[in-house]
Image 1 (cartoon, rainbow, N blue to C red):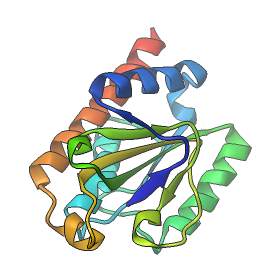
Image 2 (cartoon, helix red, strand yellow):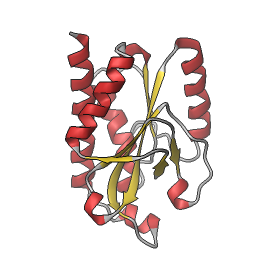
Image 3 (cartoon, rainbow, N blue to C red):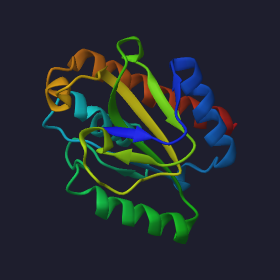
Image 4 (cartoon, helix red, strand yellow):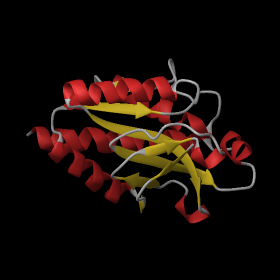
Length: 178
């Protein structure tokens, strides 16, 4: 569960525009690395790994964090280091994706940032910031017990949000490929 720097709340239309901007800057799909943070052991926190799995299924070559191999709090430091190396060695653009909790009216939307995402910050974890860009899916409302909120998050909502973001990613790079 993440927080982002310089956040802007968004719905599907703003998400598509945000991804289109990234695709214009880096149109080469092979130079995009998706760092999908989360675990498959929590419905809400599975957002990142679900997105990563769907991206792999859609043929995206650079994905860290899937349902089969989640990039959870224990692996995010190593993944961040690997992403930093790729970024330097291959001029890769890193897009970090994670779940977050927010205002009730924001559930089902996204928080976007031009800058890194801070995984685990909302639950008090101190993990390194990751990504050139960040996308946090607001999967449930903020409450006094963050872990309980993630555990009681609707799988239907998380699945639909993951499908929406993957569709927006595919569309952004398809349009800029032409």
